[in-house]
Image (spheres, rainbow, N blue to C red):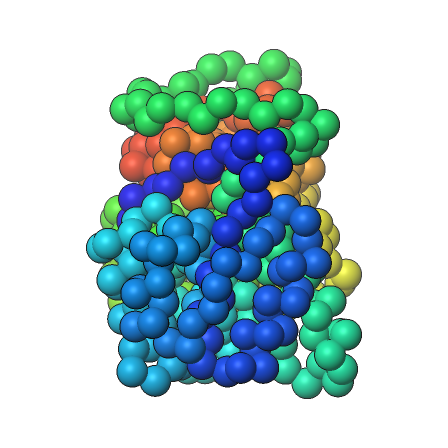
Length: 371
């Protein structure tokens, strides 16, 4: 999937949204929720994908919110045509917390959807449904744009696309302990994660000598389907982590939705510990929870990777790991769908290497082989 960079908005310009859903109730609910935000403008609605595609040239939306189940043309077929004809338009899928919803959403992300939200269910009142939409959907729309005055800083002009630079690797300003052989790889990722993981994990050969633990921000069901999908084309075994299982080479473990993934030393072995402690950085699973736990068990014998994602989850955990002497790798802005999580680590001076996505696994292998 080609990465579409953040678009810089002019002063007073609003983000233009087209709402696509066959339910009149949902269209009205989403429209009312979005129009409460002064930086968003709903420029139109459509009852199915066919109508939406006809309206795009006239309405010129920046973002589509796209339902999956619709008559005449469903969300997946609409997405395929959008990515062919209007690749610059951001797409946020509306999913359901069901097995089919999870499976189809993962397919949509693979086809090029930028992100997704789960449909409100059993909220009990219109106000609660509206509040949930505002809390979840609005930040996901805004993450793709640079808004004037964002973070109190004047807007930066949009930069031209440039070819990917070679890996930027440097010594960390933090004093590191003597080199130790890495014993584990940990990965934190959010928006754009399924595509990023699908690009890099299959390039780890079956004989890779370290265990790999992954936190992908996703709800329950979604993480199971993600693990199953990755398992079908990865040389290494990919599983959703379960309580008490061994952390061992040849296995990639995905944090289950709704649980923090941590590790504990037990009789010379390292085993998975899952808990439902409060969210960290509004996330459960949280990257910080995994990284902090990994530091306690493995010290500095860790390669930690921060990939594309909104927010700053993983920053505190990277600080803890870096203080122990771990290697910290961050995805670069050019190849990230959203450069929030890796950008926070880079801007804090914690990254040993800032890498395009296709450079991540070669750098992991280089660090494993040199010790």
